[in-house]
Length: 219
Length: 231
Image (cartoon, rainbow over the protein chains, first blue to last red):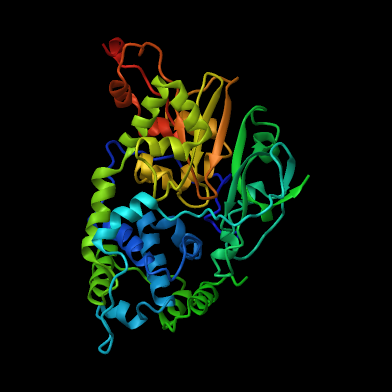
């Protein structure tokens, strides 16, 4: 979707504010949101692409105003309700519905290390023929889906070169909508800075974007 | 595809086979937009107690996750990788061609670093990492990202004006250096291997690792030699 989250190339967002000796979390609630998000994700009711998309759906003014962990909180709450793990009434009251059965959490403390060390790989062993070869000139397709996509606006319609084939991965543009993983090759595509931004930028500079087969066409 | 929150969540519900109550989503998607948020600390406390009471989360697992990212996983991991690459050319070669394998040799990998790529800064090439679409960051080697990395100013400008961004960080690159910006749009995560500063020949691998900063491994800084050559 052409949302404000897709902000690569925008101006006017202000200076970059850095903090000396920044803590990992600024407030306790941020750490709880961070970890709760992982813990409820272990139910497998949604995937990382859906959790990204639900945050993209936060209205643009709010998206820019609120913090990273507030977006986490909103996204997680919406997915919890949408998946039926909790109800709206339960979120409002903070109490389980009277007849609700107590569940057994999938992410127990003994499984945390395994989650952290193994992660959740998005690569797939499915044999898929790559549509493009290293060195080929490609054009990022001019796609403007109203749903989730990992093809940023600034690259659409632009010419680039396949620099590296990273193998087969889940396709977020469908997976975020629970429309299947559609595994396909992911590449590093090199776009000359001038192709993206015009003649005023240095000729040797470049932006590398990871794109999937379905984002690209032969130039 | 339906681009409304209600539409997305309805689809999410259907596909997850759940019979959730869409009231909250509908309230949020109404003409007033986002429900007025109260203090997030209170909302989180209430949500956590609900999730624990329903048996949906194990509070000890939540504690363990926080402890992991507050105390165990951070940029010292990446610094050790960089120092090894500086002292061991064959390790550096492996890191640049098969980052996952090379990181595993030192015991690093996993969540939000399942698929790693290492890129090397040299006298003629400078690499900079960003995630314009969200805030993807290589957790196993750098820990969780700082606020500036997740901020709109950094995400928006890094791709269109990397040299200006670097200037804000106090780094002025020569005009003839090639700047490569890596936008983390997939599940690949990037580690920048900074240049080893001159005058550090006498330092041990451990001493070298102490010089390597988080910012240098994101590509917004260079590594400086310690005053007096670190002797």
